[in-house]
Image 1 (tube, one colour):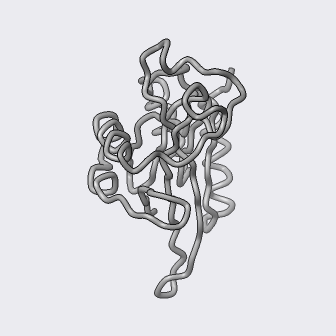
Image 2: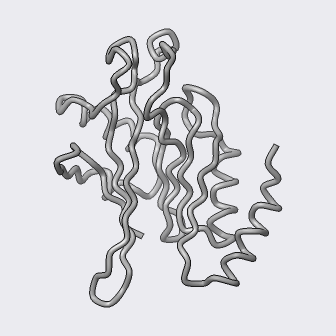
Length: 174
């Protein structure tokens, strides 16, 4: 098991040594096919408090909520981008959605702007025949509503859906 206190100490040490860096933590956590839990919330906040700029979780096989905490972002779980198993969405009566993340950095008015775009994906292999892809347009509001129900302090960002050649996305600036 990961020692959260030691990890937070390492993040704080790195932040002091490199104050201009962007620190992204990418934990493999969460109960499979479930929403985020209290341990994830406490750990993510501990890492942000230590100096992380973004916590981008994975490993639960489906999207989880998003939280805007102290002007930083916590994406509790992206879910699957690609997974070579039938999956258990239908069996467990869970939403078959995940998120693809695109993080970029751009200079804007003399400052570096960090932008995270989250693209909803349909990842139920029984439906997609092992070809995960963008959520169909008629499902975007379903994903949006699920995220709104399970997210904290992210309402304004999750209510704005944009689109580019890759598909529909939610944009988080930090």
